[in-house]
Structures are given as C-alpha cells and as structure tokens.
Image (cartoon, rainbow, N blue to C red; front, side, top):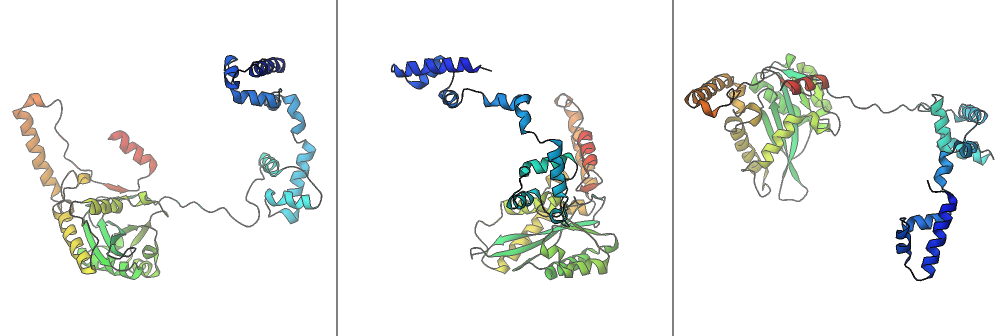
Amino acid sequence: MIAPDQRQMALNLIEEAHASGARLFLACKELKISDRTYRRWKKSIIDQRSLRKNPEIADHRRLSDEEKEKIIKACNEDRFASLPPTQIVPMLADEGIYLASESSFYRVLREHGLNARRGRTQQRNKPSKPKEIKVNGPGQCLTWDITYLPTLVVGLYFKLYLILDLFSRKIVGWEVHERESSELASELIYKTKLKENLDTKNLIIHSDNGAPMKGSTIKAMYDNLGITASYSRPSVSNDNPFSESLFKTLKYCPKYPSKPFESLESARQWVHEFVQWYNFEHRHSGLKFITPNERHTGQDQKIFVERDGVYKQAQINNPLRWSGQTRNWQLNTDVVLNPEKMEAQIREKAA
C-alpha cells in the first residue's frame, strides 16, 4: 500500500508534467498508475481502504453491547413484535430516536438468533419433489400432459391430450379438443382405463400441476377408481420428462405440418396418423430402438436375443474388427420416474 507522502509526490510530478504540456494519461503511465487512480488520489491522499481495515480507526463505528441491548429491547416491544426492522427504524425516527440503521438491526438480530419471520406470517413452503415411481411392466403408471397445436387464427390453439405408459412409452390415450378442462381429461382417462383394461387399484397417474390436472372432476374420479395421483412441482417440467420428450418427438418429427391446422378434424386426423407411426413404426432411442408397441406387448426380449445373436455371429466371422464384447441389447427391467438423488448417482456410477 502506497504511503500518503509518496502519493503526494506522485501527484506533484504528474501535475508538473501536465502543466508543461504532457498529456495526463501519459504522465500517469510513466508512474505506472491509471488516470482513474490519479483522480482518486487527487480527491483524497488517505487510502480509505486502510480505514476500513484498521481496527483502531473502525472501532468507533461498531455498536457497543449497550446499543445492541437497546436494539433487541426495541424489537421485542409489543408494538414492534410483528414488524421488520425496515419499519421499526423509521417509526423510531418519527419519535426522535435513532439507534442504528436497518442493516445493523438485522445484524444484531442474527447474532442473537432472533432473525426469524416476525408476526403470524409463515415462510412459504417450498414444493417438494414428487416421490420416486418405479415400474417393471405396462399398465402400472401413466403420465399425461396437454400441448398446443396451432390454428389459422393467431393466438388460438387446439389442445392435444396425450397419455403415455411409463414402462413402454406407448401412447395409450389421446384426444384433441378446443379447450382445456378437468372434465375432458377425466373422460379420456376413463376411456383409456377401459380400453387398456387397467387395474386402477394399483395404478399411478402422473401429470403436471395445471388446473385441468387438479380439477375437482378428475380428483373425484381418481378417488372413485382408487387411482394414486402424482404431480409435478409448479413450473418444473423436469418432473414430467417422459411426456415432455414425447411432445418434442411430435413437434420435431418430419411429418409435422409446416402450416397451422385448418380445422379440428384435420388436427385429429394428423394426430391419429402420428400415434400409429409412433407406436408401431418409430424406433425409440430410449428403448434401444424397438417400437413402443413391441415393448408394451413383451416382444422386446425376443428381438434383443435375435439381435445379440446377429452381433455375436458377426464377431465370430470377423474377430479382428471387435476389441471387446458385442453391443449390450438388454433393457433395464425397471423404469424410474423422478429417481431419488442418491439412487440416481448410484445408477450413473454403475452405467
């Protein structure tokens, strides 16, 4: 740190050079300081940083124990019991009393463990992550969501309801409507339950946190059928990743229309064709490139055994092309939605 007398000498040299015609920033450069530093020294020779770091100089700024006691006593008065320091300090000032700044009030309250929410208001509870859902077969858990399909009218969209089987990723229910509602959603889920012959007593349905998902109609249906409901946290799309991934597949597939849908019937026709393609033709990367229907109907094991045989025969025919084992064509028997953190880390290490 440069002493005040050395700073003054530097200022004198710079000013002498500047008065003789030298440019200010060049004169500062000769002394290896910036013109900004020169202006700061010009304003005050004493380094203010040293004042903050010097305990002896800064002692007078500290609150004494007696002053801290007055702050605590004031905050504990009945009239201030439910008020924060930002209100207490101005109110005391109106009475001609100044004890300390608002930040000092907060600091003293923290030191004494009194910096809790004051009054009857409680801190807003942070939504907890949905519980882990683990399935090992179709019909055990469904996830569903609603996405928008554009129309010829700007700002007007058709609503596509899609229900996905968590285990197989197969679309087991869908409908397109002009509006979102809990009634339409509950009707679709009930139709899906009948079509797929689902055991609702052991069925979990996961969805987002929107109004159609938590309406009284759909909740009543869940209760009547014994369905266990699971919900994402508000505005957390990662809690419903399988449905979100499906929507991306839908809107980025080559057959997705380049123009808005002209009518509700045209939208329904296109979604019908997409569902057929997705369920029976689409080789799903998350299923090691089998179709969702093959996974749903249990054909996957036979397919993987045959694939494995082809690869092993290719290794026998050309052993020099293989540096290790052939490709693993086995899928995990369990599918997990919203895995717990510790288990997720274990799976990553095992992979």
